[in-house]
Every structure is written in structure tokens, then in C-alpha cells.
Image 1 (cartoon, rainbow, N blue to C red):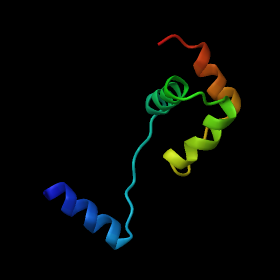
Image 2 (cartoon, one colour):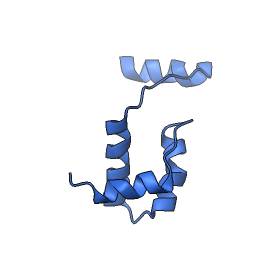
Image 3 (cartoon, rainbow, N blue to C red):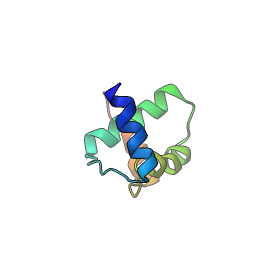
Length: 70
């Protein structure tokens, strides 16, 4: 398959990709983590840089997402 070949090339080359992350995408990630796992705000704060390297949200920013209706 083409996708398998692309993945193999990507990981064997040691290369990386850049992904633009906007506020809406971060909000969806925070909401998803709150829905599918019993993550605390601190857990989410720690996980975001793993999902999106070099990206972080403060504890207060994450807490604000809870107050927002989706």
C-alpha cells in the first residue's frame, strides 16, 4: 500500500513533519481528553506537549475549556 510505504520511509529516514495547530484544534484535544479519560487538568497540561510537541496550555486555560459549552 502507498500509505504503508510512506510511513515506512518517514520513520526510517528519521524525519519529521510540521503540523499547524490552531486554537480550535487544541480545544478539541482538551475536550476529547476530558471525555475519554478521567484526566485531571494537570494531566492534560502534561499530555499536550506529547501530542503536540512545543505546544502547551496553562492550567487556567485548560480549566476555562470546562466552562465552555460545546
